[in-house]
Length: 172
Image (cartoon, rainbow, N blue to C red; front, side):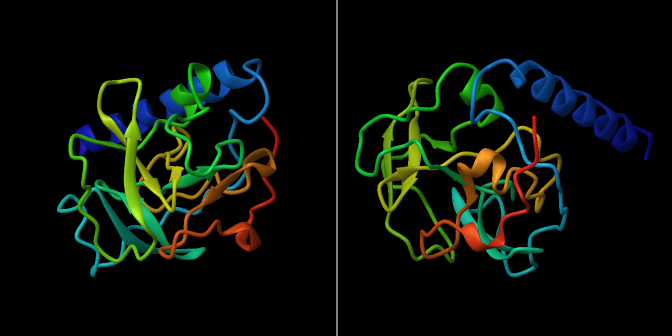
């Protein structure tokens, strides 16, 4: 119990430092103002797939292998072989990566592929767009990056941006 509390405090501190560090990094790096933490649904086999789906306050969304919410970045170009989110952006919005050229998915109906990632791994794409998690999301099911600066969007299982479910994007 004490270990869980320490982990929660460290995660909160990390999230705060990431947000503080991104304040001067340029547009698009910070997160939204709201967070809605819910755990992935029991039908989700988190950990068994690179991508799967989970039920959150925004509805059913795409999550990574540990249940963290997956986002699209409006500045990426569909079909490009590289992400435009690098440096400070990639610290705040880590790419969802895999070691496989054919990621394992459950419940995702959009077309899943990969592009080379800076780490030497493969960054996962859905319908030709790279996907990311948000460092400000502290737990599986958090959606605090939704609508950030009007350019970060939660991904629906069919590979579309969930723009209509924006939390307002907040300021950073």
